[in-house]
Length: 204
Length: 219
Figure 1 (tube, rainbow over the protein chains, first blue to last red):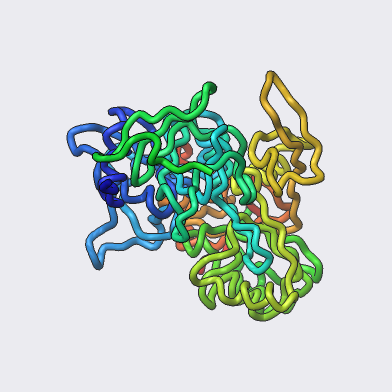
Figure 2 (tube, rainbow over the protein chains, first blue to last red):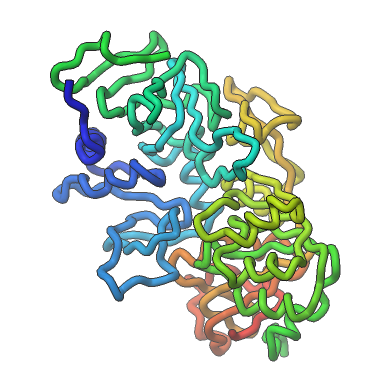
């Protein structure tokens, strides 16, 4: 059984994003999706800090400290992009205006509950940022994560043991083994790596 | 003649009292009014409650104010960052209180304060640790949490250009929290790169109208 690499996962997500979509890519693995969006389609990337039409990182020496992404890294703006304040930005997120957000996750439940902001360990400093707003607000919440933890435990679970980001919000899960839709009837595998069968996909 | 332009950062923050609640603009360092933070440290006010998206970056701006131990509590969405070591150390030593608020609720709570809204129902955070103990309600089949406004004594923000009436424009993503924070405080102080003549800002392009701004200082 092969596994998709992180770039193959990102390319697989990018394939499902249609022209004209307004999309927010979360910090971490989802950021890679931007590198795989087809150049011949116009797809508008949203950044929570007040930017629609986010472009790639600038060439070295051309960074602008006033033009950054949600991870505070320097970015660019595409022709036709716009700037706005935080209330408008979160109205776009919470108000159902974004077509797709792609988020990383610690766990996703079979019902689509998402845990991606806090491990709940007492010595970690809690920090949520815009994760909860994206999870409740985007029309489609896609999760992109490894199928198993580093210890080999499934990240798709009956019930999340980590603190929730939002309940019943995830519509699709992209892992290194499969693409899985979360439906009212349960999980539906819509794509799977070569050499694997649905029974190989461990869920706990 | 109305002029909100003050001569120095020191003068702009001179009357901030111990125990004040202060909104501090910026998303990371973009939009962080660092010159006014330095003036506030110099001024000496303490036991402050700070509302800002992050809990300081590196050693400058808000981080410098935290380092000077002037802040008793911070309300923010994302305190834990690669360069938030000043906050991390204070938090682990039990020297600063933290209230984590989802980012959209944080900005909407300030917007509500500025707009005269008594409270509002938001879906963000429902069913999570951050909604524990809060009233909730189901409206048209969807679950919401009741959130209250965040009002402040002072807002300290950074903008790009101002005129003497306090009209502001910002630069790129450094706009972020500035326009909302300006609405939500009794006294809003804007640090700007440039003060221009009245009439030089296109009325169609003014982002924050001067009614929300009380003092302007060029830094």
